[in-house]
Length: 160
Ligand code: RP5
Image (cartoon, rainbow, N blue to C red; front, side, top):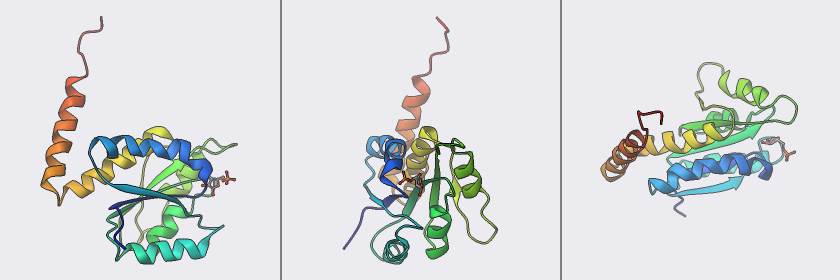
C-alpha cells in the first residue's frame, strides 16, 4: 500500500499536542502526511516493521518525536536509509533537554536531523521535510518559495 511521503511517528500519544505543530507547514505547503504511535521500547516490533515497510511504500522522509531517553529517531535511522528528522519533546522533569541531547548526540555513521525542543522544532520538522521533498518536486518548490516570500513580507520594519 502506498503511504504518504511524510510519515510522522511518536513514542507516545502524549507527544501529539507538541508534534502536531509539524502539520501547519505541511498543510500550508500541501504536503501529504500520516501520523502514528510507534514506540522504540514499548512496541519495538512495530518500529522494525514500520522502518522496513517505509523503504518500499512511498515514504520519503520520517519525522520522529519522542521525549526522555529519546531513542526513537536514532533507532529508526538505524533501520532505514530514509532521512529521519527528530523532534525532542519536552519531558516532565528535564523539560526536553534530555530528549534533545539523546537525539542530537548520535554517534557518527547514522545521521538524525535534530530540531529544537518543542513546538518550534515540530513546526520546523514539517518545514524541512517539505524542503527535502521540494528537491524533486518543482510545484512544491514554487509553493515553498511563495510561502517564504509571504513570511518575509509579513514582517513589518516599523515598530509602531
Ligand atoms: C517517550 O516517553 C514518549 O515519546 C513520551 O515523550 C514519553 C512519555 O510517554 P508516556 O508515559 O506519556 O506514554 O517514550
